[in-house]
Length: 111
Image (cartoon, rainbow, N blue to C red; front, side, top):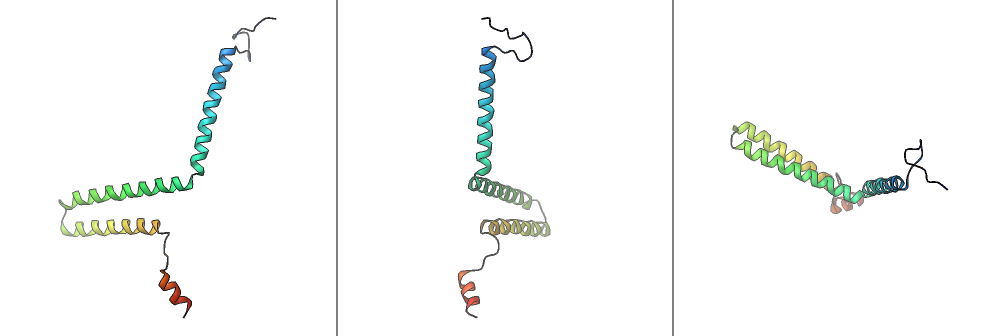
């Protein structure tokens, strides 16, 4: 029996090259599994998205405070209003949109 040389032709591979390909395939498969697991982690993705919103709101607050010291009164009022709209949006998203209070639902049911 003779061993085939790595350069003997197309498809001819030595054991070292095959080992490297197997390791690369394992690495790629691990990355794919990790990516799929991340997509299936709904709770983790929601948490990350909430952290992004919180960071954006914090950055906007810092920006508003820094510009407030330089801005005139009408610009300051507009900035505060915009910040309030963003904060209300974050709160509404966190609480699942428009939800009626327990007392309001009971009142509506018994009317």
